[in-house]
Length: 243
Length: 162
Ligand SMILES: [Zn+2]
Image (tube, rainbow over all chains, first blue to last red; front, side):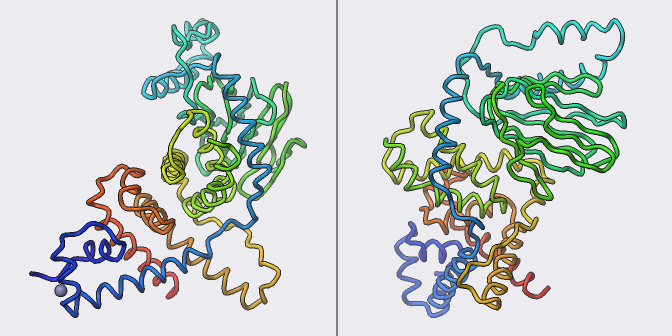
């Protein structure tokens, strides 16, 4: 028989299922025996290389548990009123809102009243399954953008990151509803985490949470509220209180 | 299924896996927590081994969702501050930091599926469990793993030479 391929060698090394004659072959063939020894050596090198990759701070089990319990409680409370669109429909709806936003500012636009009527609601409620929704991208014009986050429960986690794109992105839990008009995006948040990407450009950007100013970027200066729990070069994380 | 027992048994390891997968400590904790929320919210039942595989699979998919946009993958290469541990000498700490940067950059060089296979295998999962988590057939894992290992070592070697 021919020498064994690398997939078979690796599978033998890891105790996986291979044909019986492959095992016999590796015992009797010096080149394949050497390849198996080399595969063992490679596994040790890779395990050692990966070993150093550990989180910088030790895991805080107590606060992680509390965070999970809080999210579970919120999800169970919110489940009854949350909506779920099938993913494809969700995407289509988000796109529709974006397109609608573009003509929203036109006087007499039928879209204006349609958006106000909240007709994005599906006709019948479907139990919510918790996933991050697709979210939306909102163009940022030179006049700037205000992102208004509403319906935020106690302790909602909001992460704001800089992006290199010319648009802002907003994602939150499934069931979140987005309404976009020129210079403004209103987000009815169903569950966290909320992840927002904003461009570090000349356009001023304001993010409000439950009607209060949470973050403002203007004239090259970043102001954040005292709800910010961590602020690094790439991201600011907020834990926002109740209404 | 007891909340505390399950959490204590799997959470630290899951954070570690997510951290290696994303290179982002905050995202790792966030995704690990979301995986547990779904575990309890969906009332998933099983043996500890089955629960562990379910959590890793869910986290793998959450990472995919979050980093689906290609440019987000660049975040993997971003620096996180590295805190030297108290008992490390400055030389030892520098060595560790270099090793860490090398490994992180090499992982970031891999395509997502190679990274998932490599990290799941080196978290001790069987070929069958890996296949289930990443939606490929169990018989192809040997081929995919051999390739992922080779690419990881090539990326490490390229990083060392640079
Ligand atoms: Zn041979």
